Image: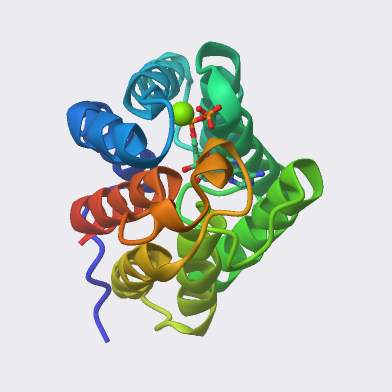
Length: 207
Ligand code: ADP
Ligand code: MG
């Protein structure tokens, strides 16, 4: 089968970062509903820095891009999500073998390592109403997906969205939303929303 991927992975990462920056107001509203309202600002600042780090980086190595972007995001974005998103990208970048265009299976394995680093750091697990509830099914779908990177990323994005939708039915047990208890029901988790928008933009740019 002919590969469907049209853009380089680094260009995909840049487009995904810009999509999160553009979603700032939506993410702010989501965090106003169940948190303190700073998620949009923090993620916009963090992913702006991610995109700037990519622009400064020579070449198109995917592993180096994820590491540099993750580091920049971590340093510039405050809040729990700065540490969480910085960790997943940095740890995934460290785990990914060098190369401009990752194989879907290698990318999935790298993101699984990144997600484990998030669990180790933040101590949240699936069902706690965090970005893990979007990332975990998304990474599983990437691992099980087609060999073609663009198609595999599309499967990843779909799984992220359904994972994010499922967080509406979860009571937050971690982070700021925890204080709301049952009142967090009905609202999607802001971090799961960020992860989903990121996956969707990456898949759209790569396809
Ligand atoms: P803060 O909670 O410090 O205000 P943000 O509002 O920027 O930070 O981000 C909140 C998001 O961070 C949540 O929606 C959730 O997805 C994610 N998050 C918070 N704590 C954790 C954790 N321990 N593990 C994974 N994700 C987390
Ligand atoms: Mg917040």
